[in-house]
Image 1 (spheres, rainbow, N blue to C red):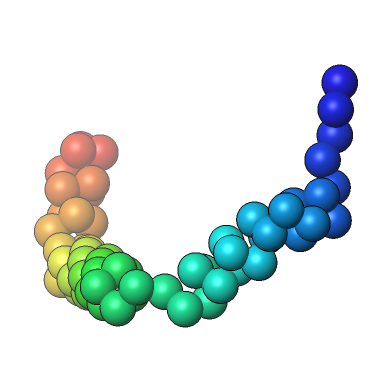
Image 2: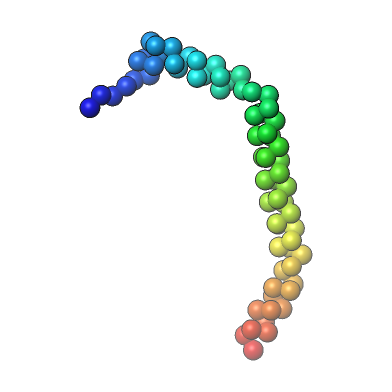
Length: 67
């Protein structure tokens, strides 16, 4: 079984090529990442607001169910 080390990849240039791509980042991919992160955050905030607003109805339902 052969194990590769970081120096093996650096020796053939793959490590430096990969890190240069990751650090630079494509503008389109970066903006898509920012957009998806913002949408996910907005969705989480909206879900929290819906839960807080619905809390009285949930409590009322649980009280009726105990009867």
